[in-house]
Image 1 (tube, rainbow over the protein chains, first blue to last red):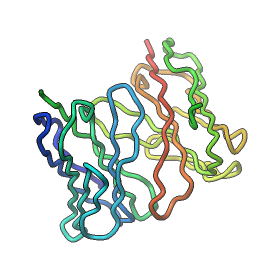
Image 2 (tube, each protein chain N blue to C red):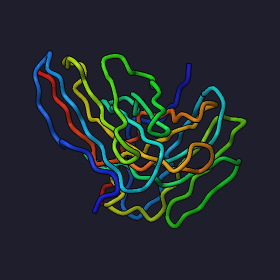
Image 3 (cartoon, chains in turn cyan, red):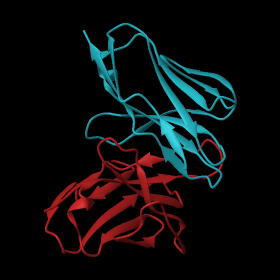
Image 4 (tube, each protein chain N blue to C red):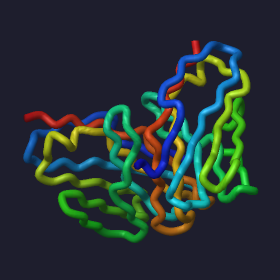
Length: 109
Length: 114
């Protein structure tokens, strides 16, 4: 079967750096997405990786290793507004998105 | 104005009732999706449509049906609602399938079946 694994919950301090990991086993690979979802709201797109390496976008970076079936989302200079769930999703061989359950990130002052 | 809208935003219904959730988009995208989200689980695909004449079942289509009335409108129906269909439902659109095409989500419909 297809599987996306992420930690259920993480806690970090305002101003710090946090890394959210995602491992996947899917039928084929056509890209990996990270989304942010605030409680009770819609997911919003953060990043896309299809080749190995690091993609940087402001305070957020995303890394992919296809050989290891592994990605991480790195958030720098954490702000209270970053408290949210972070969803990892992989596009499989049928171009369907397979979603992880999400990592709830709690930011403490 | 929001690009992807959903109505209703909240709905409480009783077991056995028929209910329709509606989705409209102004993004001009051909591809539309219906997902449900349950606590502790990832988003699960119910149905998707690549154009008005193309409807496809997703991972969990049993108990649901859809209608694509126009490029901009995609409705999800629960023919006879049951309590385990209590969930947060999202509609989404995308410009393409292959490549870096993100999905744009509506605000969600919180459905409770009693």
